[in-house]
Length: 71
Image (cartoon, rainbow, N blue to C red; front, side):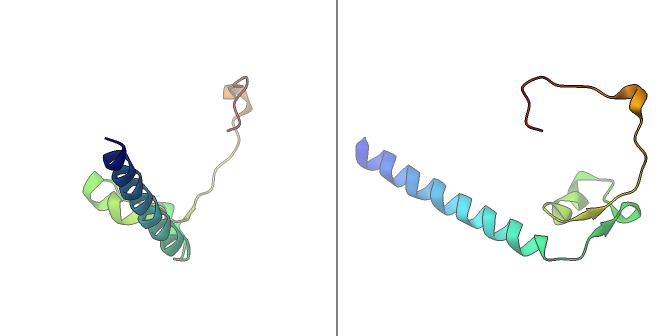
């Protein structure tokens, strides 16, 4: 059981390393404009972890404060 848990931890480490490599490589791509964002889940997979350029305005009347939340 202990050896199997060790193998599982090594597999999780490999998965996390691969995910971080994908995030790092896509972060260097140019930002996606709001009009080019995917509208379907199948097309959205290619845009995961990419920078996005959006514009808007702050709506102070609908501000929500969350206590004890970092984000």
